[in-house]
Image 1 (cartoon, rainbow, N blue to C red):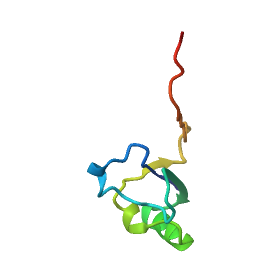
Image 2: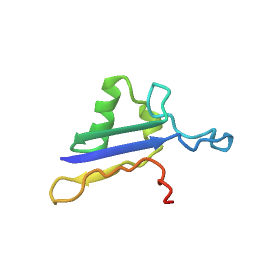
Image 3: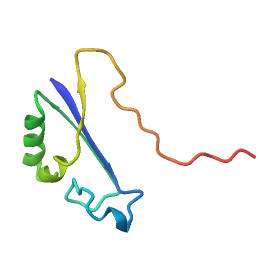
Image 4: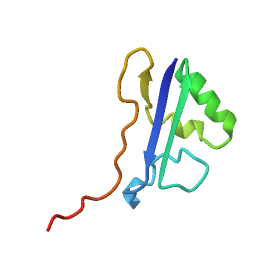
Length: 86
């Protein structure tokens, strides 16, 4: 089994990015999904079954694939601005 992680952010969208993917059915700023599956095709099939994720758009983004055989940091996320130091 492997973890398949898709992430897409629209935080920095502009008119120059009109062709960027839209991976979820809602209007989002950031969308993340992690699927436990034996293959990418199986992960995409599970997402398609949910009815909330756009398979064709997900295919435009290469997921991060994490094997469960070796120890490692799975997810690390930092969102925010640096606090100014006075």
